[in-house]
Structure formats: C-alpha cells, structure tokens
Length: 117
Image 1: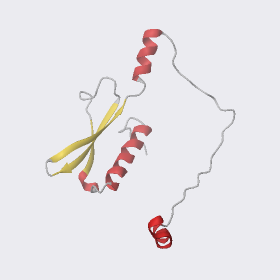
Image 2: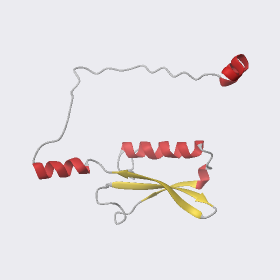
Image 3: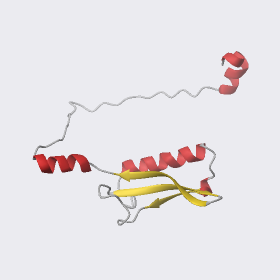
Image 4: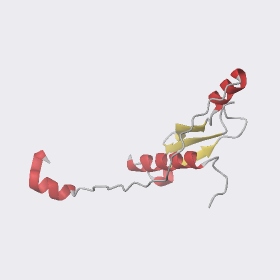
C-alpha cells in the first residue's frame, strides 16, 4: 500500500536494500532507523532525503544518506538551453525473461571438495 511517505518506489527500494545490507553486516534490526529530512534540511536539488542511522555506544550515528535528486541537473540544462534532453527507445513488443537463481548447498560442496570448494 502506498502512503506517499517515501517520494517514489525507487528510493523506497534502496532504503529497503540498505536495511537488508546493514542487518547482513550483523547490526541488530532494533539498532537501525531511517530518518527523513525536513524540507529545510534537504539540498536544493533533492525532492526527498533519508539518513540511515545506527545506534552505537555514542548514540545514533548517520552512516548513509539516500537522496532523490530526480532529474535536477537535466532539468536545469533543458531550462537554460531550451533543448529537450530526454531519451526514449520504445519496444516493438513486450517481452519477459526467466531468471534462474542457483543456490548452492555449501555444506555438501565443502564435504565433497574440501579446501577446493
């Protein structure tokens, strides 16, 4: 369900991936938070901005920033030059790809191949 809290789907995706990465590094989920910048804190080119913060013995520390810059640079160039800087490549037909993901059993590989696994 979209609540509009995060500016767009792509930014939300990277916030979620960052969370997964921090957890995979061994940081407890209860020690991770994301803080959204107020409009007065954001850079002029950002439409949304979030900080990933981790709770340490020093308190909450920002460890990563996630900013939605949108197409700020291109928009400014287009305004000044009056040239449309948009690229599109329409597809003749929709196609799908099947992705096969291999998940090797490391325990069995280790037993079989030992140090060469």
